[in-house]
Each structure stands twice: as C-alpha cells, then as structure tokens.
Length: 235
Image (cartoon, rainbow, N blue to C red; front, side, top):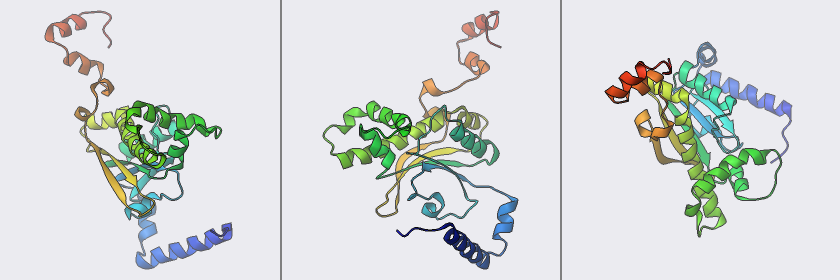
C-alpha cells in the first residue's frame, strides 16, 4: 500500500463530504443536532475492522469503542465510560461485542514472545484460554486462534452483562440486549455466535447485583424480620 500523506487525507475527506451532501443535503446539519444510535459496538482496534462500514451504517447510527482484541475489563474506566454514556444517555438498544478471525492480539496471547507493555493487556486473553483450556487439545495453531477469537467474544459479552451499568438498565426496564459476533476478514461476513443476553435472569447468579432492599426481599420472612430489627443491618 503506498504511503498516504496528510494532504491526501484532507482531499479524501473533501470528496467524501461532498458526496454525502449531494445525496443528502441536510445530512450533516441533522447529524450535528443530535446523536441517537441504536447500537454500541465494542470491537478490536484493528484497522481492517471498521464498525460503520461492516454494518452498512452511516455516521450517527453506531456508537463505537475499540481496543486491542475487543476486551472489556472491569477496571477500564475508558470502556466503562463509553458503555455508561451509550446506555444511560444515548439509550442504545443493542451492545455488540465483535471480534474477528486473524486477530493479532489473540494470536499474540497464544504465544510466549514478549511484545512490551501490551503483554499486560493480553493477559486478559490468556485468562480466557486458561478457563477453556481443554477445548484446545489437539487443535493446530490456526484452529486454536479462531476458537480463542470466538471464546474471547463470549467472555467479553459476559463481562458487559456483569457491569452495574447494564444491570441497572435492566432493573429499570430499559430494553437492552448484549450480542456476540465475530467478523471474517477473508470474506467480510459477520457471524452470530448465538450469545444474546437481555436480562438479569440470563446471567450467573453470583454476578447479579442487588440493593440492600432487594437482598432483604429475597430472604425468608423470619430472616427479613431478624435483619430489619438488627442494628448492624445495612441501610
């Protein structure tokens, strides 16, 4: 691929903007006035996986967060802030975690070669591998990489559902579904991993977050009375 200068990028941008305006004269005016996407895309930072183009959507139709290997970490306030804004402010109806076959981050996680700071980030992918290690028996490198791409998406979908942000949305009756997809670089097709979660009842009990009142209401009546009368009960 030839080197592209910044001047070429500005020229491309000018042509793109003019093409959009010729088709939809009010497009940018409308876009500037509001943002109301139905989708939050959590994907890989790989330059070959552009969210809008893959889904055939225009700017303003998808809110996007990308990082190496599409990982959702509970201490990553960047990712959590994106999810919170998308869910609480933009009121998206779908969160789509999308991995892709041939992911360099996933492949690197399968190797022991040091790459620097990113090794710490890739530990999260290695954790996915360890958790499902028996599934990798007898697989060759390419098969293992593809499987880890898929399992990583499934685990990250679970991580999204375990956030208090998503669970609070479900508690207040907000319509929100978390999906897991994987994208093929070879043919440009998205594949549904059949991981779709739409409510608290669909996640493991240990990850469900309840208020103190919710916790009391779930106890037998005699325990509720005992705890309500106790000065140590959380208020």
